[in-house]
Length: 202
Image 1 (cartoon, rainbow, N blue to C red):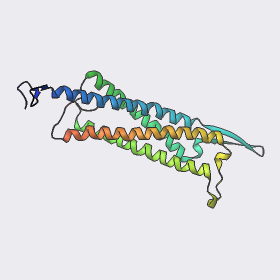
Image 2: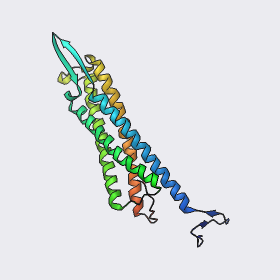
Image 3: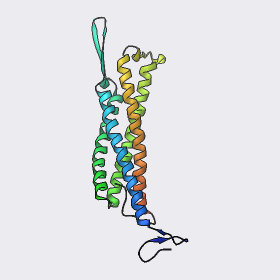
Image 4: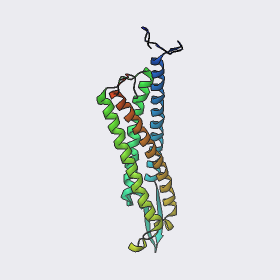
């Protein structure tokens, strides 16, 4: 039952303000999204720095050989992917802060689709980058006897350890990006629901 004042009334005649509950729910979604974007921003930059600045010099028969992330295309992909995810999260995080400060976000379907598409692309890119780097890392760790590939981590231990730290950080980024893409999907498709709500996720 609903009164003329727009306040729902339960069977026990206890007033229930549905508008207030919706605003609280929307605010919690916005805060959750903001936290995830901050996590992606911080860890994405950290992962890119850990892998991008990693190097180790070894000397073999008076010849110095430097191992760096550009020697493996998968690591280059990992650095670029985390950099893109961090930059995208920075932009969307600023937008979300503005939404929270204003107290409401009137999101059009076009903007909701744009944010949803961006989050989906970033989720796929970060997951693919972690998978590719993980496969390359395993080859460097255990080698490939059939192809006579050496266990490079036995020679470049410091380099491999720092790359491993960067990959672990990037894995957390990819998981956060997947969760964030689910939130943006929920924010988009709720616009097409039976109860179209104006206060939606940033």
